[in-house]
Each structure stands twice: as C-alpha cells, then as structure tokens.
Length: 162
Image 1 (spheres, rainbow, N blue to C red):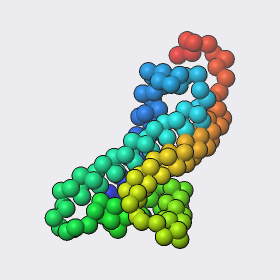
Image 2 (image 1 turned 60 degrees about the vertical axis):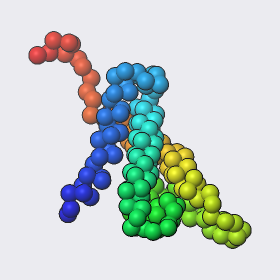
Image 3 (image 1 turned 30 degrees about the vertical axis):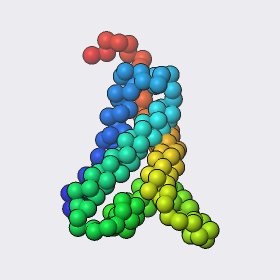
Image 4 (image 1 turned 180 degrees about the horizontal axis):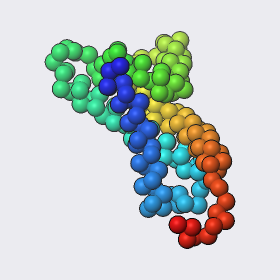
C-alpha cells in the first residue's frame, strides 16, 4: 500500500482529534458545555471546511501553475475533468458528490450555460459536505462516548489510591 493512501486516511482523523482537543482546551464555541457527540460533530464539520477549502485552493494554485499545459481550458473544466476530484469526492463527500451530479443533470436538462459551475462545486462541497460530516461526527462521537462510558469504573478508592 502506498503511503499516500495511508496519509489520506489518517490526516483528517488527526485533524479532527487535534481540533477537538484545542477547542475543548480553549473552550471555543463553549465546547465544554456540549455533549461529546456534539463536540466531535463540530470538530468534524470544521475540519471538513478546512480540508475542502484547502483542496480547492491547491487545485486553483495547481491550475495557475500549469495553465500553459492545458491551453485555453478554464478552471471549471480543469477541476471537473481532472481525475483527482471525483474519486475523492465520491469516497469522502458522497452526499456532496451526488448533490453536484444531480444539480449538473438538472442544469443540463434545463439547457443552461455552464457559467456558474466554478462557484457551484466548491459551495456544494463546503455546505453539503460539512453538514454530512457534522452528522457523521455526531454519530462517531456518540459511539465513542458509549464505549468510553463502558470502560470507566467507579472510583471507590479516593484520590490517593496510589
């Protein structure tokens, strides 16, 4: 297995883990008063927003750096036709990817010009994908909270049990 695939799987988890601890530590958005599932959901949504914005920023910078290679194609054609966006979208942002495909099919059936696609794709990924990951984060947080509460034992020995 290529190390890139391992990094793609582990880095978002590490980002959520790090954001969770920083946000609880500094009590951002009153995190200490929230349930564990809500905390993980908020951190997952924030991490998705950061990663999604970063993907589109890096794609745009890559497009600008290699624009001479692609000739006269615009950024929308570069993003939609590149082989990197769709597999990543359908694996990590399934709901956003399906929403984009449905909107593009609707757009085509109405025979509209494709002028607004460059704003549509990042907006749908950031809004729908962030909502998706908020929900998934809440579910993961509820499961982790349930497992963690099952591992805890009652502290009958007092504070100086050592």
